[in-house]
Length: 248
Image (tube, rainbow, N blue to C red):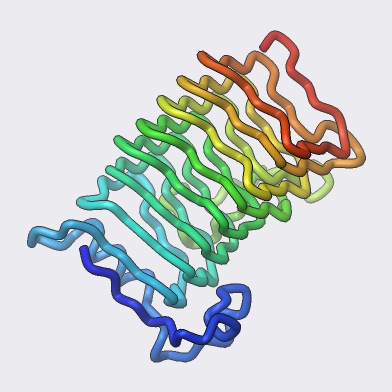
């Protein structure tokens, strides 16, 4: 449960945006994380890494994580695949990620991606037992469906969408279920479309100060969204593009 801290203490050098330049002394192979999270036979309170470069795609598809998984200020040079996984808690905070694909994941507690940067996050049909936290995160947008290359159990599909059929999206969370809050505030920015079609938020949906941008269409697509308490779009909330709440 104690963090393995590979940071240097130099804020500029430890910025994960430059993590591609971190050397082998700060590098942890994705296979090692898999062994610790899935196959380790001992008792582990949590796997916590700080200031590390994760080398290779982390394929945790359809597994049960034995303990909480925490990355703080880390750089991941390939995708993280958590499709259909079961986990107690996942916290990927202050990190630089290529993409996070966690469709149909189930967590007992929070999924925290706060103050991190990724091209795209996919959470279709996910069940989050606590809060889903994206505060301060930046999603730059990428092609969807996400190409997971060798980091998936699903064989390649030969009739996959052509490039001209792919969409550029930032957050894909159709059918998402969150028991607690869904928070996208404190500087959250999405530079492509956010999908929340049919999502169900058990407590509050908070978009205070969020910046959503898709100049050529809908910035927020949330048809049939259900929020059991309140939805907040205050304190400088801005969109470039339409907000669709049809049937919400």
